[in-house]
Image 1 (cartoon, helix red, strand yellow):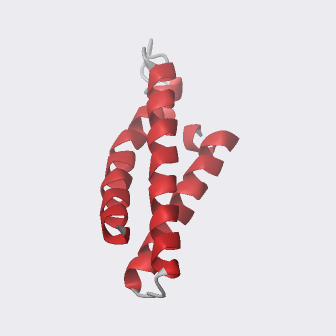
Image 2 (tube, helix red, strand yellow; image 1 turned 90 degrees about the vertical axis):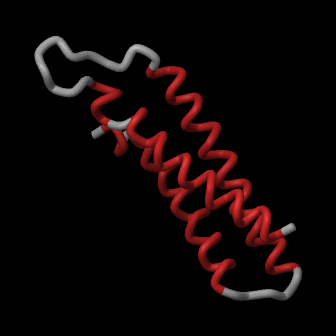
Length: 101
């Protein structure tokens, strides 16, 4: 079960990285070209980004907890802990506005 959660967390982190440009500076403020404005569906993009971010964090934390309960401490635990930390860092950066700078 922990292996499946770890694989799912890794795939969801990849999806999260692909969604990151949807809430970045060009989507939030426009590309800088004359007449460029905020992305048309920016609110829906934010909702999708936050839901995938929450799911990825939950999967990574669950994988770490299940692996630690089994007494297995290998590279997968460190990788899942790194993904969870990266997700928390992305959440903090998004909430403070650093992603839109």
